[in-house]
Length: 257
Image (cartoon, rainbow, N blue to C red; front, side, top):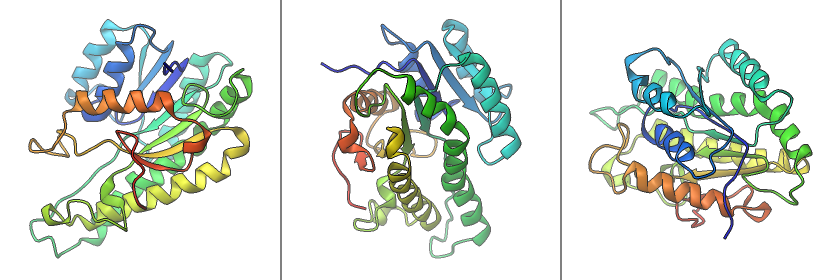
């Protein structure tokens, strides 16, 4: 059976929800990555306490401040990661950080909200991917593995089935137009990345982790964080070049664009 065994992983938005779950389960593996870069906007704030507690138990976790919409913050994070890796590349980048805003009157969409959501959910992952591309390329070039894999060099964009244009997932429960539009755009970004980085053998996928019981997903969501993350990591272990550019759910099912 294949296994997910990257030497280094970076996760954005890792202080809560799915991001924290990813860090927890990666660190809890019998053969954890040598480097687990856990990034969030305010590592010293109260919302990052669970992450700090986890890092205190696992020496491979390195907490790095990162605002994915701030170019100077991104440059600083790249410098820190580069120094930590000491000349080696970054194997797996998981663009997990994202936001959503809900209006009581769903037919009213606030332009400023859409701009903020788009900046975080689309422009942020684009800037992060570009900034860490040299390290991803280095990991790919130095690997002895054939083809593409998440253990070699990969960008995983945490998307949502809500971004599907073909099937407006859970429309009756919430229109959330800005969020849906941002995830549709993130899916296009993923598709373009898969083509643009194919020669570098960097695998790129958009991944719907399920409707997860997080602060964003709510307590009535259909799947727990632990169950979602476990399934996601199992899926990442089996992805190859045939999957690059795909829009998948946590179980590996191909979703309609």
